[in-house]
Structures are given as C-alpha cells and as structure tokens.
Length: 79
Length: 408
Figure 1 (cartoon, each protein chain N blue to C red):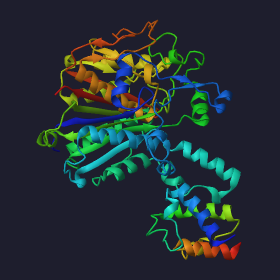
Figure 2 (figure 1 turned 90 degrees about the horizontal axis):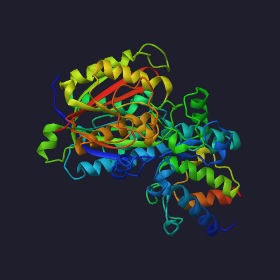
Figure 3 (figure 1 turned 90 degrees about the vertical axis):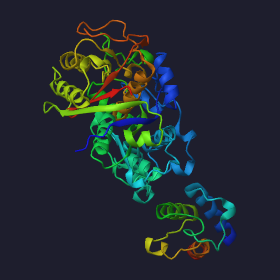
Figure 4 (figure 1 turned 30 degrees about the vertical axis):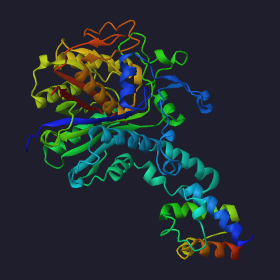
C-alpha cells in the first residue's frame, strides 16, 4: 500500500469519526492543531485504523503520532 | 434566605406530539395522540409493542459527528434547551455566565448507550467500545451538555427522582434563584429509553398498557379500561429567571413559578401510598410556598399515568389538599409517559394553559372510574380562567413534587 493510499484511508476514517473534510487531510497536518481531532476522537481513529489497515497501534505509540504523516509512516512500517 | 420572585421566560420541547413547543401544544389542544405501534424487529418478542416516539428524529437536526458523542437523551435535551434559550431571548443579552445555571435531569439516563456498547463489548471486545461511552451514559450528561453549549458557570445539576425528575429539576432551579446562586436557570428533564430492556423491565412490573392493537387509545388516565402507562420519549426545558432580571431586560414572561413542594413517601419503593399521604403534603407545601389561595388554583395538570392504583390515589390527594373546584387534565393521555421529562413537559403545558386560558383535554376518558369525583376536561379542550395552576409529579422511590405556577 502506498503512502497516498494510506493517507486516503486515514482521510476516510477522519471524515467518519471527526467530520474532517478529506480535502484538509495531508501528511503535514497535525491531528490536534490542524484537524481539531480531540483525544477521544483520536482513540476512535486509532481503533478504526487498526481495523482498516490490519495493524496494531499500541497506546504508548499513539502519543508519537502527531501528524497524519507520522501515522502513515507507522502504518507503512507495520503492514 | 431572600425570596426573589421567579418567572418563566423561555420554553423548549421535543416530544411525541411535535418537534417544538408550538406544535406540541397545538396537538394537545386538538386531542391528538402521540402513541403508535413499535414496528422495530426487536419489539416482536415483547408483551408491550406500543410507545410514544419522538415526532421529529434528532438525527435530522444535529450533525452526524456530534450525534456519535451524544446519547439520544442528551441530543434531545440539547435541542429543547437551544429552543428555550432562543425563546427567552438570552442569546446576546450579556448575561454573566457565572449567573447562569443548569438543572436538567433524567429518570433513567443513558441506558440505551450502555446497552448498545455492551452489545459491542460482547461481539467485538473491549477495544471496540466507544471512548464516548462514559460521557454518553452518565446521568449528568444531559445537564453537562446543556451547560457546556450555553456556557453556564453557576453550576450544572442533574437530579434523579424517576418520574418526578423534570418537576424536581424545576423546583431546584427555583431554590437556586431564591438563594441568590443564579439569575437564570435552564431547567427541565429528558428521557429516551425506547429499547427492549427498559420496556421488558416495566412490562415485568405489569406497569405498562398492553393495548397493542389500539395504540392511540392505550393511555387513558382515570378511565375504567386503563391498564398501565405508555412509555414516551422526549425533552422539556424551561428558562427560569429572577423576576427583576427579566424585567430589567424587558423579557417576555409566560408565568410566575410561585412555589414548589417536595416530599417523600417513606412507604414503598414503587407503590404509591394508597391515600396519597406524601402527595397531599407535597401539594399543601407547594400551595403554602406559593402563597396563593386554593380558590385561585383553578386547574391541575395531574401526574395521572393511566395506572390502576396511582390515578385514583392522586384524586384523593387533590381533593384533600386542594379541594373539589379545580378542572383537571392528564396530558399523558396524548404524550405518553416521558418519565424523567414528564414533569417538565407538563409544566410547559400548565404554563401555556395559564397563558391561553385553556385546559388541554384528557383523551380516551370514555368511561370514568367510579372514584373520579373531580371534574376533568374529558376528550375536549375547555376554556377556563386560570389565575394559578398546579402540576403534580410522582416517581418510583416515593418522590412527590408539586409546582404552582401563576399568571403574571
């Protein structure tokens, strides 16, 4: 799966869970500062991403996923 | 304690009879029933397959992402609270948030969220349980959401007294303003538990009507053929305001909340006292607190839920505590029983009855119980001069709340 495909998959999740417009989702964007994803919604994003991409994202890893790009890299490395 | 006058300056509701106060009131005056058959698949196995479901689905009013975080009881409390807030004209009034409080309760709370998330837990494991579960099911959730969205900083409260909740929440608002803790209190109740488990529980108590073939005729307070209450869902919110505060900003005033009486039976966890002893004391306290003459209370919106025992105990209580002159009605005959929201919706009906000099009907009162020796606005609305009116609410646990509203 390419980075663009993972980004697109995350954009779908972000729209469903937090109402983020897919047009706003890019690797440089911060989940909290740019996309207004709060901590509870971030939990939903992580669980949905695990299911969608068939990966495990431990809680202690989540705090390192500041940007969409961070999440793409983590998922890319795991899958 | 200072004894400020407290008035009602805003109303909001979403009910089985309409998506707002105006449509709900119009339906009541025209004697329409909000009860219908439950067509959901889960209802097939239940002994009770009727309920009074919301006329307007909250999903049509709130955005999808927001709804993911709200129990249905919270969503409809927010809808009703925003209506009441707009109705009161407080949006850009410069009200100090530290003088704004919330008192919104629920009888059962976020039970549907609890049950839905338990299904997810059983089917998919703990990691799939929504992180919004706790704020959705906590009983203070509706009050907290209303306080959050209106920016209330004088305190957010959620009383729970079963079917007396809505009225007790309003009584608490009265106390708060009188005690000087707030100038404005957004008060009322909300309930949304049309789900097989609560229905099965109430049905097992033999508390609900099983008139499944005639939904609109199932809620029939004081009628000989009554066989239990009909579960309803909805929210009712009133804006209570210190009278001087309302006058200073030129607010439109619906009525005065003149007094409240709260007692507990200390008798049985679910059965009402057969002679209505606790209810008698609550009504007497409310009248004394309001400082009105019994003769001026010409109308009563009764608790009357359509159960065999409760309806007649209330008649005894009213005759004893108030007299035989008031014209009664039981609007639950149309709305069904909104549990924790009932006292709030019925307060709204009482307030509008005073404003419009009209008593909404008690529908389905075709064959009155032999013990019904007080006059009821049976089956048709009646014009009546109403200087003051009483609203009763009683709840499992032996809670009795009586509110007196007066014309301004």
